[in-house]
Image (tube, rainbow, N blue to C red; front, top):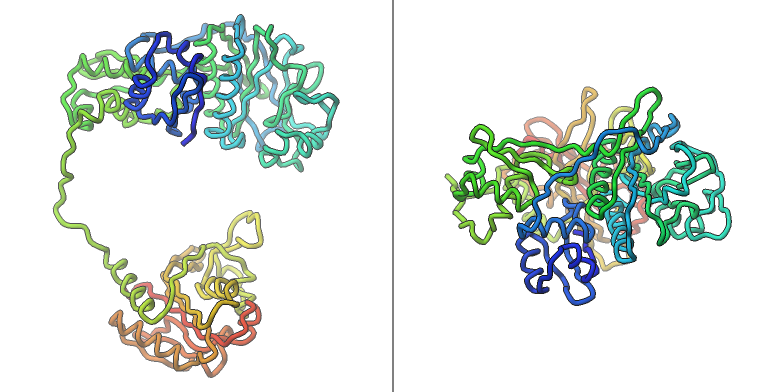
Length: 546
């Protein structure tokens, strides 16, 4: 969960009334937030990740005022008029970072504390909710420095005067030398070009990296333009609503902008309010207490919702800045918080039977216990593998369509889903070949293959033992002991597998069907994994046996 550091003096000013620090911590705790530190200079609060509106002093103070019943203005709205600014979106951004929104703020006065909190808020929002600017990025500009309408496009490696730089730099140089460029280099694929926002005089922002020096904020800045870009149209729209509410709380006059995609256009911010109709009976049943209609309205207001009685139900109107509300369960949870978990009596969860392992899990546990008892340590490996490890190093032929392949794999190490567990175990042992012998590992988990063009999951158990004295008879004894512990009768017949020495391996036959192989591993396989000692192994498909 993100930690938010707030200037105590500024935060108290936003709350609008004096409150002792211990009382403040108590109220925040009741709201569900842990105060890590509170003194005369700074207040540190741990905020739940689903509340991006609380990542700054403005939103947190607003929520606190509602919670203490010191605020009754629950919803914001903006008159729909001519857009204050237009952004034309070029088709080149489609499929890369395609969506943009924004707001214009006029007649706003920001002191140093307000500016510091604002930029801390936007940074936290982009780094947490925006996944380090990959999903969402925000830029704040001096509106007075912008000339004409804007264009959002993909550009080649041009030059701009980046914020706090003294000379023009190419976009690629910014990515390599500028602090922000280095930090957020992973958000761009420079081979596709550079997303930029331009006006008639040049580049306003290299998105989502850095703004231009030309549009930086100063003490005299009163009119702002905020750009919001991302990979989701819904997300950039809701972020515009959230920022609009923040600036309106700060006394600014927010105007809409127009974003034009070819022949279609949309205005932002949307300032849309969700509504949910929930019966009192459902509220009381879900929370487990008697609330009553009047108290339900009061609790809704306490969490910042507009609320009213409609046909024996409570209509909850969700503020435009609440990005976390998905369905009525989120509303019910907020009402429970407002009511107070300390006042809700816990009850025993009824059950008709005691918990127990499923038959499959009990079967697998029995197998694991048997192998541990024989001196094997359990290993847990990734389902992802490569053709080289899964087939080539095992000297097995890779038939087309045999393995589940990863579409558009970014690395040669994760091309397929493994068809066998033995390659993973040998890879593990190759990393510990200098440790004391013997070394014995096993794994019990899923392998995958393709049957009739459909992916199939199967549960395998495999084990490898490296020891100078390892031989066929030892591998057979391990398999016999394991299957005996599982109550499975089997036959051992001469088998053939390119990963094993011919004549020193056998197939495991159950009900006339081969379900596995055991024996001495081929020296070529051991060389491929860098293993110098002899090794024996087995792998059995347990699917259907449990």
